[in-house]
Length: 280
Image (tube, helix red, strand yellow):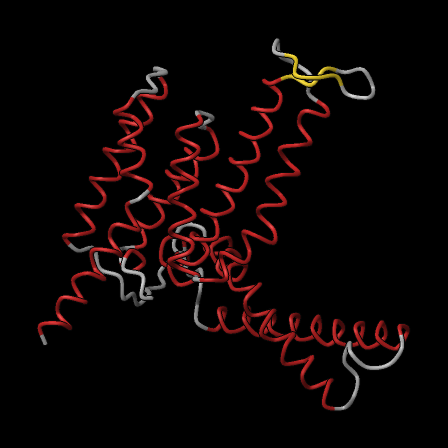
């Protein structure tokens, strides 16, 4: 599906994810954690489809369980003793809750970062930071493209090696190891050559020079202005309420409204297009 929120100005995308990630990393209130995780999960499923469900079942769920179990093994603080471990240390309800909270916070941040990686493309990074920190913005934009490009390239190399009987599925164990090392060697060579070519290309274009101008397709529209005010007001209200420790119904509503914003924007756009198709 086409993501409408990604079509907003890069400043809005960056501001939104910065605010949401900061809140997700520091809020330990159970209601806030559930709200953030639910919204991050819904948005990641919308962006990535069934791949997200598979990733959550194969990686995120075991990570949640392992992280939740590790804390009670090492943290024995608390007043509500549930049982005693074989070593004699108490298993407390507070340590269990802390472990679950830490685990939920971890997978929530990972889910938001998966959405961030999908929305904040390399051209948006260069647009936002190219004039201020050109070297770092280039490194960040290349890093964001690193994993997808490496995955695609290693598949090409593996398929090429498979045609001559030198991939990981051929031969005995030693032969498979040699074939794997060969594929990895080719991959590293390609990556180094690609990095040099990218650096030379950016240098020849005058990237990082003080007076260099840059073409941009991003325009700050009226909807971006409204989104900026909305995110700013929600963020300020949530921050002040949390600072005063006012974890009440209004804070939860504001936090939910902030976290669910991309999903609501996309759903509204999908409904609008569906109505237009029916009318046509």
